[in-house]
Length: 358
Image 1: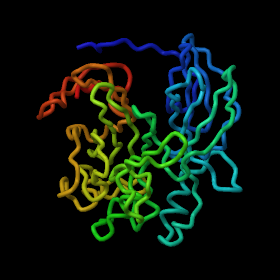
Image 2 (image 1 turned 30 degrees about the horizontal axis):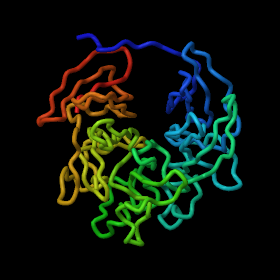
Image 3 (image 1 turned 90 degrees about the horizontal axis):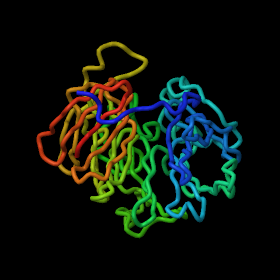
């Protein structure tokens, strides 16, 4: 069947766009992974880079990512954004991906923990009245996370951050190291959802405040690379898309204090950009797909080895519809998560998106 909506190219003049925020006047505020932010108008006009951006280091999937508007943007013109900052004294710009293999993964753990790769940050700033520059830029989260961010109904911020494999004893993305002996390592260093207030303070309802060995901003943990985050407009549930390894992409409903398994528990299999020696058939971590105390994913597209989910946008439907972007396979799918097992209906479209009914 044909797609249930139409697609239209607004512009092709962007370089690695990552996030879009819809401005009240109908224009779009767009981030580019390399460190620039621009205004794109509905007619395809693209602005020069917005001035006043802090320095950004881009390496692999790291860089300038999310941008969201303050709930009271029409009055305050405040925005929030996530990015990877270069170490103090080092220039902004691209950092060769090969450095992760040759300088980071090859080093012993004690040395890796002292390496200054960059700082994951959340910042806020005022967008000037003419939308040409950022004013009063302030870092409100340092070392927090820089994948996705959403504003909760109470005005606080949920931020997702990827697995920081270089900070724990691991081999090749951390997929071969069990954490059964030190669960707090996973709570701090695997992919997390973090929860902070808009001024950077820690909300009182965060689940680990009584445990000094867990970072106070941690809301949930055990993800690999959570590149999609959204709050359902009717249920209030926090949805997360985890860009997992081969066969391990997941959709999760995120709840405070819960463990979502990575890398001990995963449906995915190993892959390594440096080798082609059969490791692709080896399961991640312990090889288990379930474990006591670990949340099960709400949806796992096991029949598709790699879809690489990137972001999701819920609709207002009572059927809990959602759209998600994917980096592989030019199809959409409509899935029903309200009941189990999952129902799938593919929709052929010319771009990499999917539809899920949850």
